[in-house]
Length: 93
Image (cartoon, rainbow, N blue to C red; front, side, top):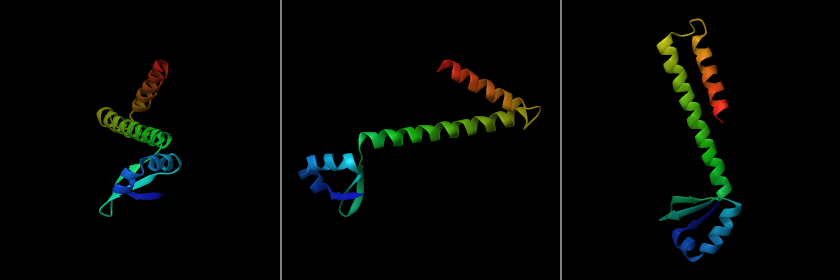
């Protein structure tokens, strides 16, 4: 990963953009990292990873809430409910 000071980034903005297309660039101020510049592709991949993590966290929270409400494992009701929810989401997509 390349590192530039904030003054270098300002004075060499075109170079910063070119470099960020190939690899992430750390911008420092007073010797401390303050910003990372990444390409659009890297940003989108990162954003999708965060969205996936949020969805997994939400699903785990939903499973826990349903299990607490219905009672853990009584007749597989939780599993059936989650499966029905998954099927509904697939139909909507």
